[in-house]
Length: 387
Image 1 (cartoon, helix red, strand yellow):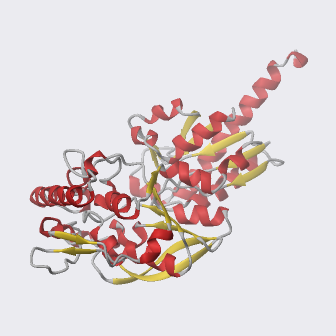
Image 2 (tube, helix red, strand yellow; image 1 turned 120 degrees about the horizontal axis):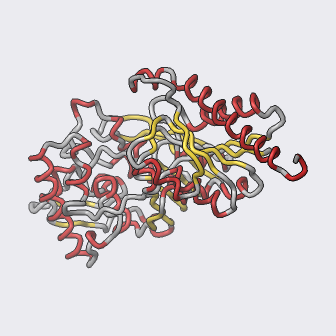
Image 3 (cartoon, rainbow, N blue to C red; image 1 turned 180 degrees about the horizontal axis):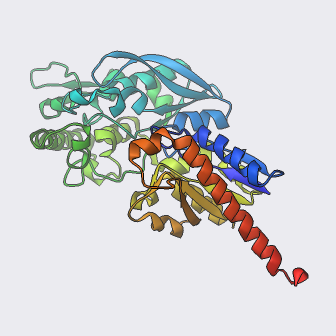
């Protein structure tokens, strides 16, 4: 019996690696002779760099960059084979880097993400993948591009700092000083968000509130983003509202596509390709996946959907073990997941569940594997040879 474990992290409680360790321990308790293979996995958000670097024997590099409020920090990214860089924009421009009482996308920037790209080029990387989930920003990607040499100028010719509040003040965009090495690079963006840059489903009105923006801030950001969109259309003949994913990460999706000609790809599909998931999958008997909360959003490019679909392609059953099951969780059953399990064993608060996540997860894994064993015994009993 060969098990393949590929679960997302349970944010704030269990990493993807920890789920592998706990599943392995539980599986061997029920099936002493089983083979267990674990692959850290992510969907382009937290844990993406770790998953890809681990699968490819790459290395982690630390770079000195600026956070969303332009404070100096050290941020990690991955390098594979000396030429390929894997960057999580959240490492430099993520919401978790900003204290709750200072969150406001009018005053945050993606400058640090641009610095990570610059550092990767300095290390010789020319194949650069950027995962753009979890941002604290709504600057249209101006900060990121500024770090790479693009100048965003006001009406009086002064260079703007590149925060959300600057969107309405951009009068000209000068790409003449953009880093010359960019033309030799291939850029890929991991993103499962389809939002346009502006409008009801755009960057500001969809995502800015969760980044600390008030209703008034949102309207200011939207007006600024519309101005920015129109300027890009005038200068580059590109309509960012017609580009899927332009509104991701507060408009960073637009900037990466417009200025770097980046290729937008599904986060989970890109991760599964880069970790060579299918190679490990082919001879597995059962796949176990999961995430912190399974709900209707789990079929919008998340780990469980991607892992389940790949398992389905090879005719391999896949089970989901999650922290909680929310509204619409059953939707994942249409994507190769045979059954769902939850780690909660009795009524408890979220904080209680997170504090006791390891024990709850392990105990639930034991119950899940015992159910698998029961199914195997039932199949054996029903065999004509046993009648």
